[in-house]
Image: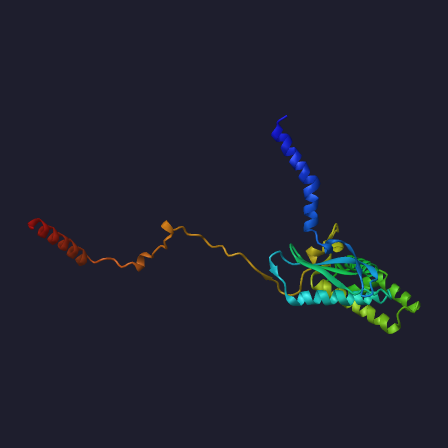
Length: 260
């Protein structure tokens, strides 16, 4: 076999086996992992889990700041309400990273059991309201929460004296309002969009008017010797009398030179 071919195969195999994994580690952020271990102020290690939230926007659109505010506030309120069902979690919601690639995404981290509840609840509610009209969106979300068993879980926590009646009612209201705000802001999770009959990214969209930016197509006009072209109307045309006067002056100079 050709030695150069063998050399190319050897180099390619080395890159695949050794170089590419190192390059992948270099480009991978710690927050890209689904689970992280953190230490609190007392040095106690706790496991946190990620829920990635994306915003359904056009590829070349600019985001209204109020949408970002609504998504972050709703996620914080939703996490706080679900945390009341799991006392002594000791982990607050945190943002690991924000990305604006193909779609703007937010990586939220929190206690694993709470984040699992949040992800499951959002998917279950979405599956039940994806065909619902927007006029009664809030009502449909409350019905979906009941069908998904969330209301029964609230009553069970109340019966076990984990939460009181007032907190139970407040939890129901905050969870329903937070989910409604997320959906109306065009926010969805990866689980709501992956491998489903109705993809959330194709249905949800921000309710505010999107600002879309475009590239300006400018035609490049070539100039000889990189000199700017002059408009013909801007160049004054010489008069006939001036041309004849110049010719007469040239003849007089020639006759004078011959006479000398």
